[in-house]
Image (cartoon, rainbow, N blue to C red; front, side):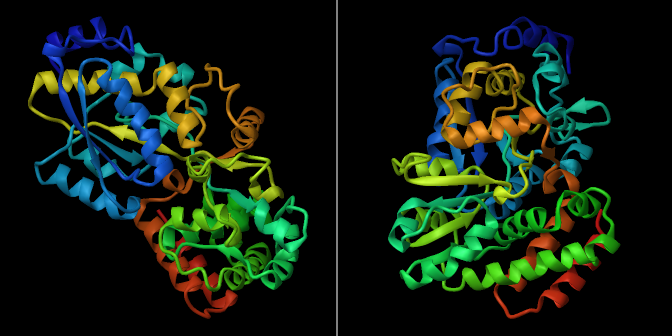
Length: 413
């Protein structure tokens, strides 16, 4: 990076995250992401509005489908010499090879000027953006996957109180079915089924066993009795989801919103769908972190990376956008819409709903775990997702699934 460019950065965007430029100097930046559901679109619109307000232009590059669909497209464009200006990815190990190839912009100067090391909480999120001491992404939210979402209307129809934990939910399944309600909504994609598996495992096997597998990569623990109980619980969950034939996660969420299903295991981004549908937490739906049994959450989430380009004006604008995305006002507006927790530990989230307040309390109490995107390589993650897709769509036994799972863990990187 030239001394001139560093001077521009430190003198403009880095000293004020929301600094504006004149319309004549405005820059168009194409930004790719896979936020296409109703709630996600509302959230990403907060980013676009903030960037457009600076006199620049956000060119939205939404890619329909999940991250599994979008990531190969995003990576192919960067490697193929047709990079976007900025792109969403999950902070973790997904971008390692792009960084090592010199294809992503070094954001270290932006991070130091913005004091990210002291404001990003938990610090592991910034660590996941760091390679060889340099920072290559800006974390924008904290997402956790260990949640169950429950329809009040479905339980009212069945004449039952809304469950307070996973055990009460499974006990209620018969009454839901008798009332013509599917107990558990489940999208037919491996990443969704892997989320459900992880949440059930944490609740049933316990945190020590979960840590042994997901942090220590201990295949003996994966073969042990705690995980045997977890796989048996997942078989039961598979039976409760029989008949859930939707593909996308937000369609499964809609089954809960419309009371076609009693519950869904899904990450906290599901809140955005309830919000767009006009539903109110505590009145229309309930949310239980850790499935109501183990009040911990993992701390993964989304980050933005900025591919290298040859235009100094574009580069300066990329770095200005990086600073803007983590600015206090933008962090509040985006995360309130997204249903995620902010990465800044120094902002007021008192207007957040009850679900977000539960997550914020767990975060404050230190009940956090690394996400799979941080714990496992992309190759290992895809193997785990493929196994879960096979497991949930067949009559594979718990024992066979556990054996295959342990083998993946034994060779995980």
